[in-house]
Length: 163
Ligand SMILES: [Zn+2]
Ligand SMILES: [Zn+2]
Image 1 (tube, rainbow, N blue to C red):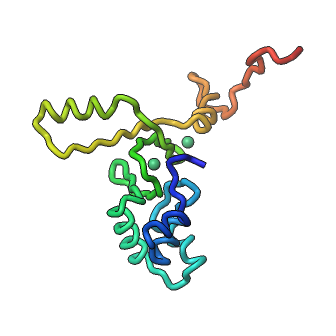
Image 2: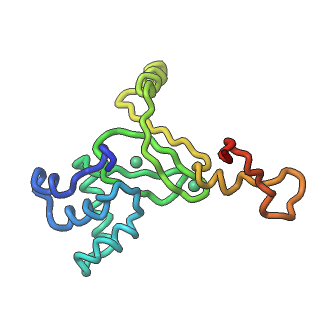
Image 3: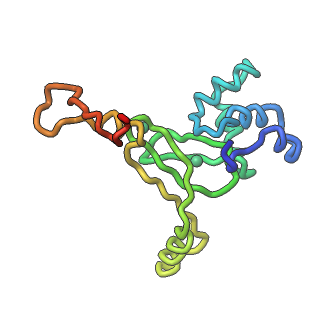
């Protein structure tokens, strides 16, 4: 499990979370970045009466406490995760997978930029977008000239494993 991930049971006792808040945290237990709708689906397994509005309010409270973080890129719907530490993201533009990453040295750079502009109470976030390795592999066999064939005969000479 990602060391960044929150242990819902532990936090429930430490923060004396309500059932609803604990259920939302449990929905985020697997370390994923979920939309409010998918959180609602999971919470409804335990608490069938819960509404989307309640999920949003609960997420907002959990954010204020600092147990949940929200991620959004270029106006996309927010995705939530149970994480305590500051981190940054790799976002695949194809499958929309999100990966947590650290960016050493970024704090210093951000603070320097902000200082020079006279900013106070600075925050920053880095999102690196591209194609994840799985999606890049799917796209790789494209042949540059013809657009007709989908599979451009891959040569199997990658690494000389035929001994
Ligand atoms: Zn991908
Ligand atoms: Zn994240």
